[in-house]
Amino acid sequence: MKTHLLFRLAAALLLVVSARAERPSSDQLAVEAGVTTWVAAWNVGDRAFDTKKLQPLYREDVITRDATDTKHSWIEYAAALRPFIGQFAKVTPGPVRELRTTLDGARAVTTFALNPRIWTKDGREQTRTTQVRFVWEKTNAFWRIAEQEVVCTLRPEVGPVAANR
Image (cartoon, one colour):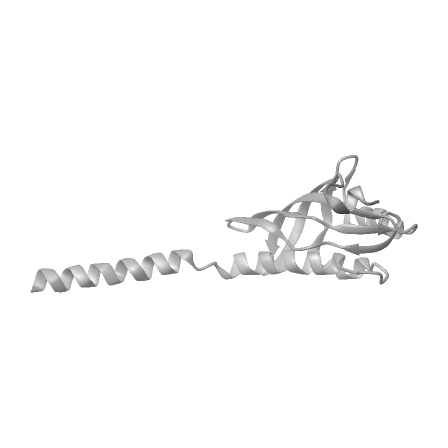
């Protein structure tokens, strides 16, 4: 009888520990909420893009990289964003796919993919494949992007829609 009860207590304890291990931490939830906020800031549709929605997510000394350039501050990055986004009539980022988060103390790394749809001012639509990597740092209880790497490629048009153009 005592063995049976001990076995049940051990099984219950194992369930509690495994359930607790699967639950995301508040830091993980905060970083992933930052990803959601970042994507929402890019989801402007046909409205004007506003870097003020992104700014609170970044450290002032953020390092941003893309295929051709590296910026070393928020001011540099924001100045490059305005003309880049200004060449498009409409932008929708699409849903986040393959979100992965790794936490290590006051640093976190998130990686994810998007398939943004972009309309040029002459009405052409483009779909891109975008891989994003953020390195977050926690300062004074707030998570901010310290490093960003974005790799974006134009997706070839395939299927019946492309064939009918």
